[in-house]
Image (tube, rainbow, N blue to C red; front, side, top):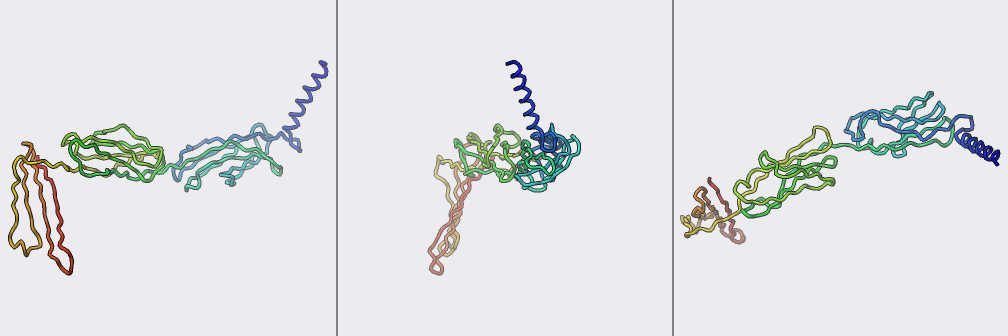
Length: 285
């Protein structure tokens, strides 16, 4: 029984050795390892990267072939146990993606494939746009600001400012969508200048948005009748009629004036008379 066990063990070792040997007596190649030896997997345009492909064990000479999405890119024959080196230049978006290498003996069928390496192209972001659904606001109102960069590789990180002071935590967007913050207009100082900035993994690439200001939409009711002055000179024949309205200041330190221009056009060529009203609230500190 002991002798039979030794025979079986010897036969098993012999079978494994035969499986590792090709028809011409060479040791079969193993699955090669594809390693990045120069550069990064996150690449920018015009960047060079170098890949190393090596199968061990395996008896040289060995032919190594580099593939991108099953398309042959390059090949190298090695007569020793040194790895095959492949240098790539990222010159377009089509150069990124999944790469593999294959190890095989010349004039032999089969071969073994390596692990895969996936390159991602980093693109610089475009200038972000800062906007809001409303450009007018009044005290006690909730408003929103959105910051969006149309171009650039994801993720993109946004930060909002009022003047030079940031007013929100960083918002990192994994999808192509705007970062949004909510604001409460509580005082006159909240009508200042807002901006946002955006950046991503592209080196030295931070962009600032346009400036955005909310204008005052609040109207104050006067404690006395407003004083109206109306232009009556040739009012019936004039195309323009201007009405000036003055509202008593509510706060001692501020003055609010409501200015309206009413244009009345006579009926010409069958057109109906129309009126256009322009109004603006002026704030004087």
